[in-house]
Length: 400
Ligand SMILES: *[C@@H]1O[C@H](CO)[C@@H](O)[C@H](O)[C@H]1NC(C)=O
Ligand SMILES: *[C@@H]1O[C@H](CO)[C@@H](O)[C@H](O)[C@H]1NC(C)=O
Ligand SMILES: *[C@@H]1O[C@H](CO)[C@@H](O)[C@H](O)[C@H]1NC(C)=O
Image (cartoon, rainbow, N blue to C red; front, side):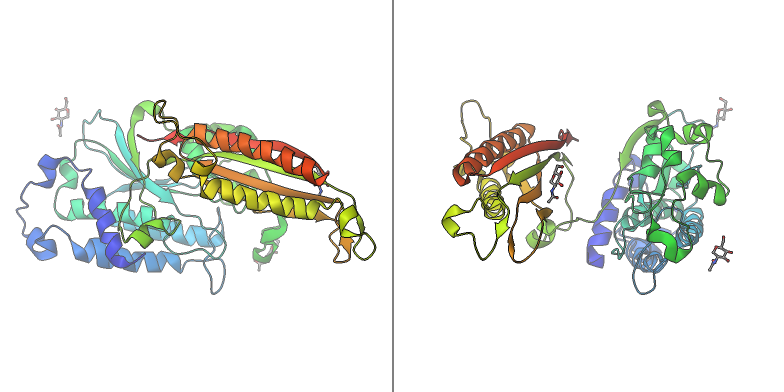
């Protein structure tokens, strides 16, 4: 994302400040010096970009960005983030799951807090904006309030949180940090162990979450985990700035979008059984080839999702499918396994995964049902045996 987009995002954050405060004239002349037009470019653009680059260099890998849950680099990043939070006038602490908090608490406030944040961990070979943007933007926005004297006049607590784990790279389980704050992290998580992936960094393989926490002086008990939880009554709202993880805004040349919800998702596994045979001796007419059946199904799925209105009837009266509800539909086959997977053998079995997401649960369910029906028809036609297993089904989570 271009630096110019960053400042637009920051303005959005500043807009959470009550209008009466935001428009109050500042007496100390800083406004004039820092941004007479209210943009505070030195902080919101220049320093923010510098900090993104600085955090993007704090890595466990050489020549690429990798910063996983409680890794050596994550602790170096923690120190830097804490110093930025202090610079913004916030009171800081690290909780028992390694999340970093920076809070401004108005005296006598009984209001619920506004939380702003994102994740500080990364995937392997990550981009420097993922997660970091949401943390640094929040800190920069609050720094402007401090510098202009507006922070002290807030009537509501504001807190920036840098979550220790979102990606789940190290323990193959996502959201360790935010799930703990939400109070939905099960105690059993302490016994989950990491994979041999980390031998390179001298994290012995098979280390549990509990061991890793203890090694880094956290308490790592069920009690300690419980203390990380924020009661819903203490939190008014949560805002997260995140870069778009797709090409749409960029293609439309929009600097900013607002997330309307988290798409519903269905994951299927399709098992196609045919007759294994010799590539040289079984004539085409006598084959029951699960590979070509699978290929046909993959292409059919693409057609179903690329042009759903051809398959789904849109009834204007019932308003079942609007163009908008169909627009977010995406379907993917990301994994395909064949047996025995040899160049001179007609496979005996092909398995593949299907991932279907939509911003409308009815659309998604209809696509799942249509696809399952098509699987049976095509498989009958090709004389192969097919089964569709439902692996996951998650409903749409709409924010508005
Ligand atoms: C906080 O409340 C106390 C007791 O009600 C009061 O004396 C004090 O002036 C209040 N402080 C602020 C900053 O409002
Ligand atoms: C790796 O761990 C072992 C055992 O804990 C320790 O003795 C050794 O110094 C460590 N090596 C590095 C490079 O950190
Ligand atoms: C396909 O899935 C079935 C059922 O899970 C499994 O037993 C089989 O080994 C899989 N086949 C391949 C080629 O992965």
